[in-house]
Image 1 (cartoon, rainbow, N blue to C red):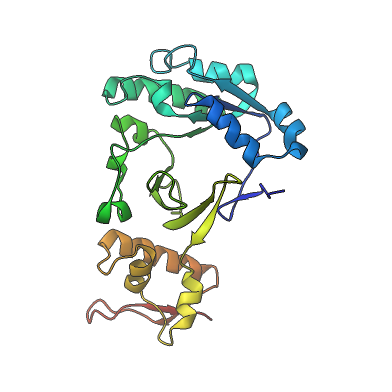
Image 2: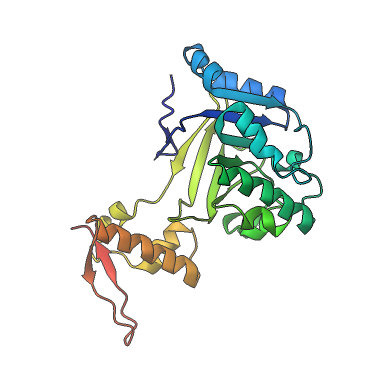
Length: 263
């Protein structure tokens, strides 16, 4: 049986209440996916802790912002999964609708509910754009992403076994970028490829700079200043935790970069 204690090598912390799954987009397909992922051994736990709402909500969540919190309360759920936002509210490109939907989200959050949402892009990403997506690629009003604490974008063509993961908005630390491989038969995803900065720094006799780390993390020969600073922040955090040490302190007067290596 699969181990559901982690997702993409990150630990999962279960809530104390139930999970409400709003299966608004193709509920029969959702049910088939659950059957692939979860065996009979977990059937009792699912029956006790998972509540599935099939099809659209009773009313548009943007028109009735208190409805989402009420549905969670009725289900005794402290976690809700919306699959997907386009089925929860109509005319999501309208800022008034986006703001009203965000009010529904924030009302649920105020009541102590963890809110996870599935959503779609404006259009398919290809070429260089696919490797450097931005939060503007998310469909609809800016309120949809502005009110979210964390935004993760998965990009790939339908049926692709390997897709890319980009953490476009972070509450604290950035996850990835990662390449994710999906097992269609088991319905499970795992990390296919990621950059281990500790191993990378140890493999180079001179250590590694923030620019070199950014080039590998973001798969580019010309990382942006923001990408360099993100890479620098990761290296400094690894240094703080004792996984890396500075072997060359940078000097901005001579453009000498800081280099990190393994202790």
